[in-house]
Length: 391
Image (cartoon, rainbow, N blue to C red; front, top):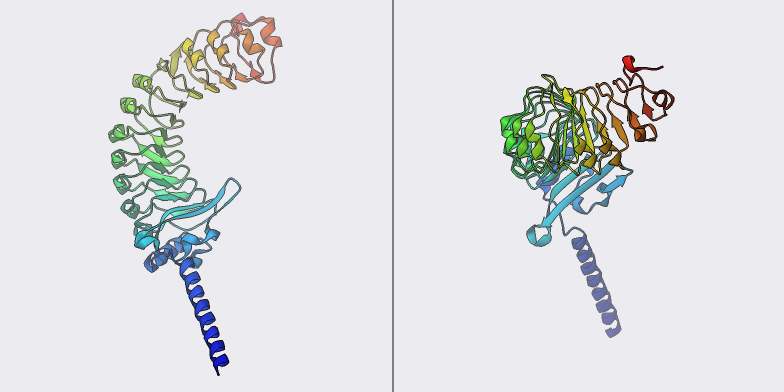
């Protein structure tokens, strides 16, 4: 009888131990859970985005590695959570990255119910419809819808997201004027709006964006003059204003932007003006002032931009000679000055160069060296004046 009791006791102990271990394991694996209401919101959001795995979202999403992966350079999925609530047992989604997944849905207003969400990146999908104003309810720092099919205006409420640091809306079908409320974004460092259908002028309130480091408005139908208040953007490293309907001249206040590494302005209308003062911008990597109605000579100080890789001054009204200081630009890969009225002899260092250089349609002095040195990477078509031609 005692033996039977001992066996029974041993079995009971083992069973209770197994049960305790099983409960501990189950608790451990489910210790950090999303609230059920947040799960339902996420399922709704991802269903409206047309994500194929929307129905698989559960309370254990924050520990689900199947939602976190990178495939090559273009496809990325990443869900981040903050699990500090409830003694590190309650989670909330803080970041959603779903890039390059060909999702064809719309941006759900239910995004606004994910009250801990700080980062949304839905780059390179096929999302359509409008940007929901409910996003203004979130403590967002980063918002990117680059490369989708979104339409309509930017909701003025986006300007109420005081925490926003990056707003990336490039390459969509957005339209209308730029909301003046965006000027309230005191922490904004990157504002990328290129390749849309925006119209109107740059709002005066944008002069308040003193933390900007990157502004791109290429390929829109924005009009009016380039504002003088760009002088306020002293932290700017990149400024893109190509292919708009804006008017020149480039304001003299651009001289305040000493931190620029990339300046690209093109296709200005209005009256002709002298070369803008860019002296001291020694960090410049790319300088494109194409079809900007610039007259006068190319400044010698361009040769002091030691890091310069691209210099495009095409389709202006430049005169005089190519400065000899340009030969100091050892990192220069592209030099384009086509369609100007440059004169004098073509420098020998250009004729001997293996860089990509376009001197076509100017008034350089013709010589036997010029006509015989048509190198593969130096375009000299119609580069000399007919009156000086010896050919």
